[in-house]
Image (cartoon, rainbow, N blue to C red; front, side, top):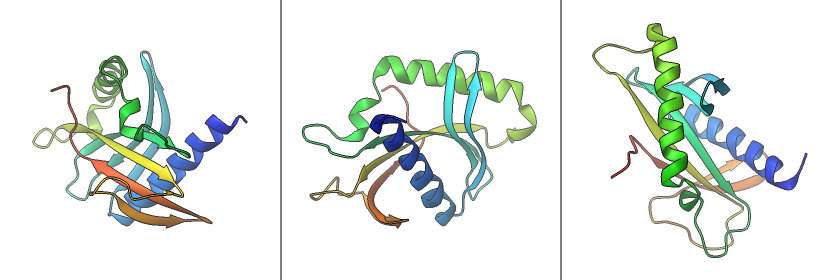
Length: 138
């Protein structure tokens, strides 16, 4: 496995652990749909179906992990989530709907990250995790 894939896998593992600590229930990981892949599918504490995109960096220099979610990637992700929600209507509460969250992770952060980042330890690593709820193209 390449370093990039290992970092991504580690980030997804940490994101799942973080989400569980926040009372989310993990339903599925790396779900493949016609248009792409969804990193994590979960239910939040209120029962809302949440599609979680995870962006992880192990050595950020000029960018934050959030910067890697481009407009084009978000459009593809949105189509993929819509396809999944339509294929699994039993998971979507008609009153609550569904949303897309972004979990941005820096592995063993060498410096202070964004002000809203939570420091989180998982395994033998430390993580700076920023959780953005209900993201959209604005």
